[in-house]
Image (cartoon, rainbow, N blue to C red; front, top):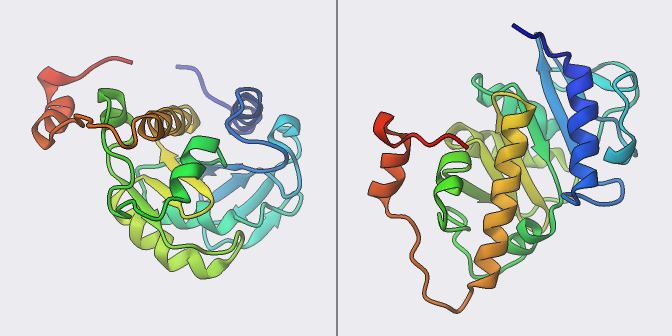
Length: 213
């Protein structure tokens, strides 16, 4: 069994996110649970330049323990990880189509993007959109915790997605699927669509309906 170095995983995934255009400039941040600590990308650093040797370390209460100053959105990551013991990683991006959906006035916060594809159903499932909070505003903590109890995929209004996974690759898969489906949603706005039904979504998680990506 191969042991994954969480620091190297953060460096690899961060650079991949930037290379594929899922975020821009010095936006976006990542976190990985490491025992009772959390490794985070530091503040003011482009994901293109993240180094395994220069990561921030915080406690699950958000206390800065070691390394450079963490991203100002560290509280988002630790709030999700506290509420989801099944998750070991969180990815937050400003991916353009997801961010665009977060700016729409007429979407349902309880279901901002319909399940247009099977892979959205499998990798994202339930999505919740939170009210607007200024970036870095710790007042969002309670809203994040409440939503994270119900789902691993959140959309911050006028901001972007925050998605947890069992590891960074799973979280990244879900962020990419969310971004792809957000693009489909925007392309089909005003047209009649046929989202997956509740029964079809349930079948995706049933043993006979499992699909290998």
